[in-house]
Amino acid sequence: MDKVYSLLGLAKKAGQLLSGDETCERTIKSGKAELVVVAKDASENTKDKFKSMCNYHSVPYREYGLKLEIGKYTGKDLRAVVSIISKDFKNGLLKLIDNSTNETGGEGFGKS
Image 1: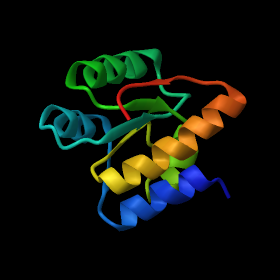
Image 2 (image 1 turned 90 degrees about the vertical axis):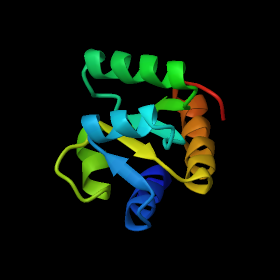
Image 3 (image 1 turned 120 degrees about the horizontal axis):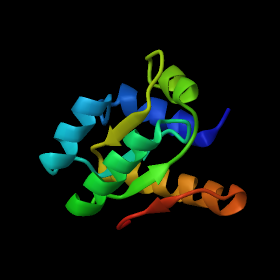
Image 4 (image 1 turned 60 degrees about the horizontal axis):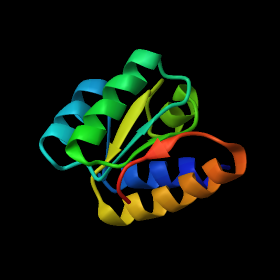
C-alpha cells in the first residue's frame, strides 16, 4: 500500500482531511487549509483552479495519485481534491509526496 494514501486515510479518520471541490475551496479561502492535494487525473480546469487559488492564498499545492485511489482511502467513490487542515499531516504528506515526485516526476509548488 502506498504511504501517501495511507496517511490520507489516517488524516480522514482523525478529522483533519476535507474533500470535494466546494469544501476545499471554502477551506482555502477561510485560511484553514494547510495543504491541497489534487489527483493527477483531475481535469485541467480543476487543477488550474486550485493551483491558482492555492498560489493566491499561499497554501502548498501538490498533484498526486488518482481520483479512484484518493476516494478509496478517504471513504468516498472518487475524489479529485482534498485539503489537509493539520500542520502535522501537512508536513508528513509533503515529505512523502515530494520524495515520490522527485523519484517519478510530477508537479508541486507552494510554501512548505
